[in-house]
Image (cartoon, rainbow, N blue to C red; front, side, top):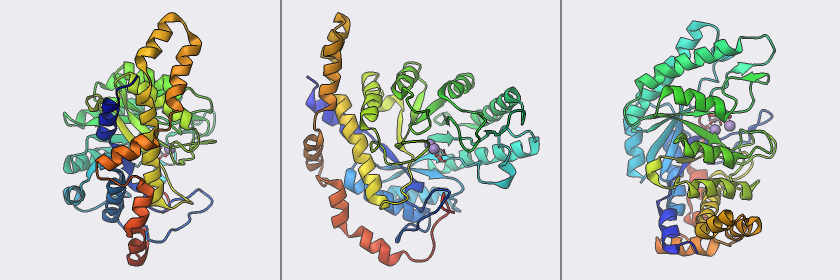
Length: 388
Ligand code: PSV
Ligand code: MN
Ligand code: MN
């Protein structure tokens, strides 16, 4: 039997980082649907994030995206966050929305374009210094569309050189989290397409470079939990970008498409010590809420991660290991499924009650009146982002 007090303690100490861009307007390449009351600037995004934290108690960190969240004074933004019980999380660089980056950013054949891209990444580290952020999250859209378009290995060399320059600029407590993505927007080659490529670059860079696993960035059927277990074992799992996918990089709410996969991933995290804050695994959401109400969707997502975490923590590891030692396949599988099939909602409601939080965070948010207030008060434009 898993120790319930330990499960509750782990659930209380878990931090789920929400993305600033999840609060703003977003869409597909076909249409951006505007919603009433969305934030008009990064400050208002933090106001919304504070509501998510108030409802759930486990979401005090907010990731920023530069330049979408550009402000004059980042230290002031960090203070604004602190005043609301929040802290600023990962700084997400953006070297994919500039005409100059059509053929790539840090892997572009033109050294002038590469310099511009690296300049932005270094600026992001300056911002981290001001905000106190630990993580620089790098996702590169770089790649090619046509065979022969550019040299695959030369692009790897350019990537390594750029990463090396940024790594050298990091402070002692700062990290690079290097994200990979199978394809899109490049369709023939992607310069960081998979965990192996990211891992190899991180290994060369050193201990302050780690891989980030975006759950939406894999081919269908990929065994993501294997990747997670491997990276944890190597000390190279920097964190997650959680979301759900049905077909590609869908950015739907985590736990919506495949809660069993989320459980399997978090079981590996639990079993390999990844919930210990000392391992530094960042549990981030990377989602866009195109057709659903945004703040309740972020709350729902946080709850989905918590539910899967609770189930993962409930796995009876002694029984599992005994069955594995005995080669008892059916019992081992049953131990895992017992935990997965446990309804953890009463346990989470009880825990929230003990912490003075609403037993049902979505209902708590709806009753708070915040949604009506922002719809009434926030008129006139929406902030840059996917919908810009
Ligand atoms: C693009 O695929 C992407 O969704 C990556 O997952 C990044 O983490 C995110 O955008 C924000 O830049
Ligand atoms: Mn991502
Ligand atoms: Mn993505």
